[in-house]
Image 1 (cartoon, helix red, strand yellow):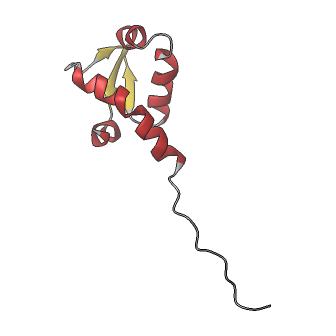
Image 2 (tube, helix red, strand yellow):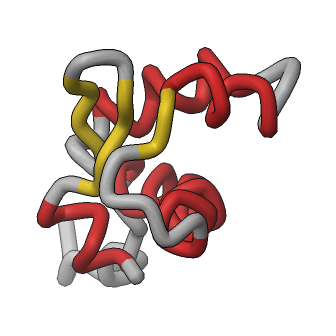
Image 3 (cartoon, helix red, strand yellow):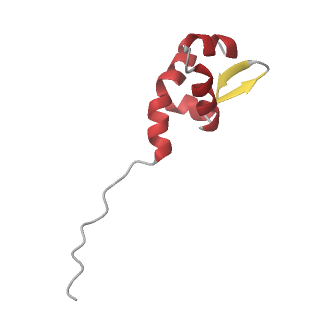
Length: 81
C-alpha cells in the first residue's frame, strides 16, 4: 500500500505519575505536620476512612516509609513537594 499515514502517538502520562499527582496532597499533609515521624495512627485517623489504604499506596509508590509505628517522607516523597 501507500505511505503509512498513521498519526503520531499521543503523549501519555504514566500511571505512576498520575498516582503521584493524586497522592501529592497526602505527602503535603505529612510535610505540613512538621513532624519528622508522624504516628501511623494519627495519619489513619486524620484521613479516615481511606487512611490505611492511602498509606499503603504511599508506601507502594515509594513516597513514604513506615518505621516503628510512624510514617516519614522518603526522598521520592520530598521531591514531590
